[in-house]
Length: 94
Image (cartoon, rainbow, N blue to C red; front, top):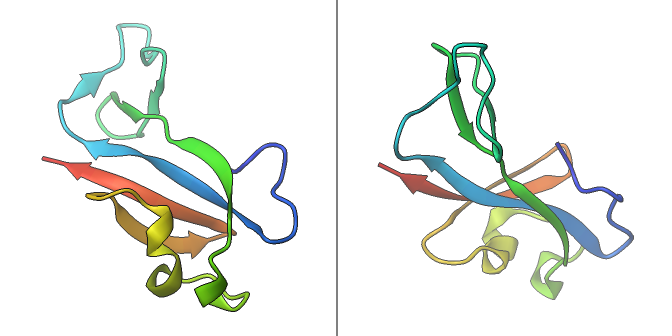
């Protein structure tokens, strides 16, 4: 997924949310609860990420990496990417 509408110049798409935590199973029809999507593994579902455009930090100098853009993530989220123009801020739940 990505930001919709697409981010304009000077902004980057940031995905944030939780991965892991309690196991969520799809129902008998294979449908995941609202706010989740199929993982493709054992009829399990995971939480949907939220997407939004955020200003690229000046420290990035136009090239976004987690080294300069981790400030876009809220602790204890972990910065990942960017991949395909999306920076991810993920809370890894046990």
